[in-house]
Amino acid sequence: MLKKLLKYEWKDTKKLLLPMNLVIILITIVGCILLSTRIFDTSTGFVLATLLLVLYLLSIIAFSFITLIYIYVRFYKNLFTAEGYLMHTLPVTRTQLFHSKLIVGYFWFFLNSLLTALSTGALGAAAGFHTATTEMVDEVNISFAELFGCSPVVFLCWGLVTLIVCSLSSVLMGYVSILLGQRMEKNKLAAAVGFYFGIYMVIQIVSSIAMMLPIIIEIMSDTNEEAALNFMTDSLSLIFPSMCIFYLVLSIVFYSLCRALINRKVNLD
Amino acid sequence: MTLLECKNLTKKYGNYTALNDMSFQIDGGHIIGLLGPNGSGKTTLIKLIAGLLEPTAGAVYVKEEPIGPASKSVISYLPDHSYLNGNMRVQEIIDFFADFYEDFDSIRAYDMMAKLQINPRQKLKTLSKGTQEKVQLILVMSRHAALYILDEPLAGVDPAARDYILETILSNYDEDASLLISTHLISDIENILDEVIFIQDGRLHTQALVDELREQDHKSIDTIFREVFKC
Image 1: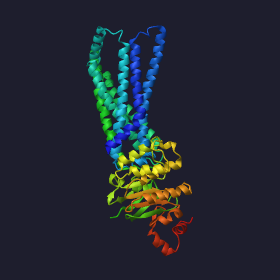
Image 2: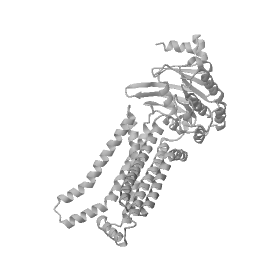
Image 3: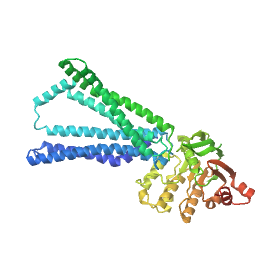
C-alpha cells in the first residue's frame, strides 16, 4: 500500500514542483550562457547584471520557500482537513500515510535545495570563468586548506551531507509542528504555526550557544595569537560535521515524535 | 459473526461528552437507521467507527477486529461533506478508489456515472455541488463492502435527488452487507429500514427492529422519533 500512496503523492506534488525545479535548471543554463559571454562587460551591462542577479536571488529564495510551504500545506490539507476523511479511511496504516508524505516531501525539498546549491555554484563558476587563472585556483585551494583544514572538494562533500540532513530536519520540523497543533482542541492551524516558530527559535538558540560557547571559552582563556588562529581553523573544519550530527539528532527526535503523534491520537474535526 | 460491535464507547472533547458509554451490536444483512436530533452524537459515533476519531474509552470492533486497515477495507464510508480533491478528474478518483479498495467495482462506477451523464474527464470542482455529492455516493456504493456507513446522505438535497440517492443505495449494496444510515429525514427512509438506533445526548436510547417498534407502539418510526425527541 505504501507504493500506491507514494504513486499518488508523487503524481499530485509533481504538478507544481516539477515545473518549478525545471525553471531553476533553465535559469541556471541561461545564466551560465550569458555569463560566459562578455555582454556584461560594459557599464550598462553591469547594471543589467546586478538587476538580473537580484532577480535570480529572489526567485531562488522564493522557490525554496514555496517548496517548503507547499510540502507543509499538502501534509496538513491532505491529512487533517476534508481530504483527510478519505486518506484516513483508506485501508492503510497511519505510519504508511506519514511515510508517503515524508518520502515524497523530503525528495522535493532536497532536490530543490540541491538544485539551488548547484545553480549558485554553476553561476559563480561561469562568472569567474574568464578571469580565473591556474594560480588563482591554487591559491583558493591553499586558502581553503588553511581556513577549513580541507580541500574545496572535501568541503563541498561535507556541504552535501549537511544539505541531506538539514533538508530532512526541515521537512520533519513542519510535520511535527502540524501534528502538535492537531493535539489542540481549537485553532489547530494557528497552534501548528506557533509550534513551528517556537521550535525554530529553540533550535536557533541552542545551535548558536553550541557554536559560540567553545569560541568564547577560547577567547577568555589566556592564549597566544597563533594558538587562537589554530583554534579558529579547527573550529571551522568542525562546522559541517557538528552541524550534521546536530541536525541528524534533531531529525531522529522529530521523526520519533511524528510517529508517536500520528499513531496515537488523531482526531479529525 | 457480529459485523460491528461498539463496547462502552465514550468520546469526550475537553469537558464535553459527545458519546457516553455506548454499547451495541450490528449483524450483517440489515439496513439500520441511526437516528437522533442534531448534536446527539451520530456523526461522532460514525467517525469513531470509520477510524477518524480515537475513543476516549471503549472500543469498536468490525468483524471482531479493532479499527485499522482490516476494518477500513470492509467499511465504505460516506461523510456528510465533500472529501475529495476538487482538482482531480472523475476518472482519476475512480482509479484512486480502484487502486486502494480491492472490492471497488470500476465498471459499476462508470456505468452509474454514464447514467447521470457525468463526463469522467471532467474535474470534480467543475461539477455542480449536487453532482459532486452524487459522484461521492456512486464511489461509496461501487464498493462490495461489508458495512456501508452513510452520514446524512439525504441532507440538503431536493426530493428528486433524494429518490435517486435512495435508489442508488438500495440497488447497489450487497445483501449480506449492512447499511448504517444517519439521518433526521426519517419519513424518507422509514420504509427501507430494518432496524433503528436512537441516540440521545450521546447515549443509546433505543435499538430495535423497525417492525417490532411499529407493532409495539402502533405508530410510524417518524412519529415515535418526534415523540421521543420532542423539544
